Image (cartoon, rainbow, N blue to C red; front, side, top):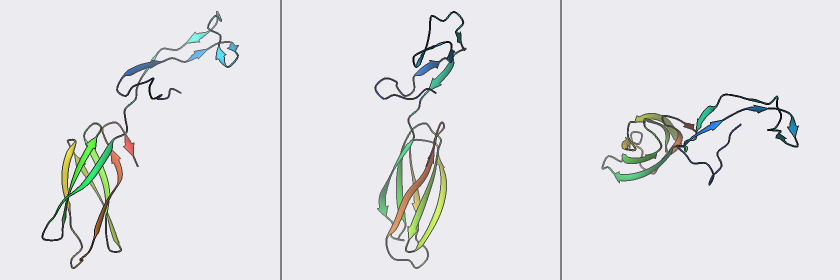
Length: 130
């Protein structure tokens, strides 16, 4: 199996992988084996895992928070996040079509206190990350 090797391989570049079968030469294939077989190439392109940075933009007078999201990766992004207020946690999922976006989270009626917003899962056009 081909693996990404930092400093040797690069994200976004296309590499070609071949399967080779032949007589053993230690832990390698003997490339001088006249009966060796080489498969057709398979194109491989590694992509970096998407990321998101959440920042509290402001506290609204209603007690709601405006959260800015900055993504890396390839849009669209599907962000799943949790909002915890007191002992209550709610989960939300939202799609963003660019590398920046904002969303508002509001406390339950009558709640006065800190709210925490945490990203729990992120997908971009190529990758799902938990």
